[in-house]
Length: 316
Image (cartoon, rainbow, N blue to C red; front, top):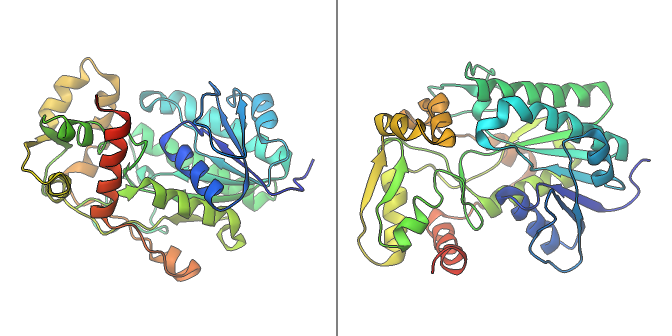
């Protein structure tokens, strides 16, 4: 049945992006249902927790029942995207459509492939690697569903992220936990290339805005982030916040190949190594032209909050 409530449903609510969206929705006073497979989600006031398998249309329809907006923040393991992501997203689309809900898809920038200028939403989907093609195909299918009238869709795209809850990311444990533990903080790729990085709470604010604003419908949007930084600059900010010098290093392509022989996630990074060895910068001016100013959290502030989270959650 069509949605008749203000219920916002977050799929993948136990993950980094989904958890951030969940907290943002609660802070704005929305009625929220948090969905993941385990049902283990940190308690938040007024949040309905739903344990369910959304990889099937039936499971997704149950999870989305009664929703006004559905946030698709769920994802398979990184090395299983090609095999599992399209099927998952198709099931989620059926679930949101059955509820008469708007679907907001948390996307990334892989579909553009190697670029030589800041990425904008009108760039062609030029990726030739499997993960980039999967991202392109899912976006195309979702936007086609919107054009057909079968499902309201908005897509929010962000680059690599970091922040509270952000563990499985290039700026995750190998940076923050390592720095706090007095170990070498490692950056994936060369240290001297500018890279857009999104702070998880900023991603959440952007996705919730897309969910609440009809002007977002039927389009993909780059979510605003703080200005790009090099790996060296980012690591310097981490140790500046810690108030002490630290040891840093770059994980280069040869070492990535060696580690990838035994670690499928690291092995999969080779497909998109072009993002590491050249500038990889997102342009979010379409978003701010349409919706107005968006004050992204400065990296220094975001790094301080991320270090606080790691201290509280992932250090002895």
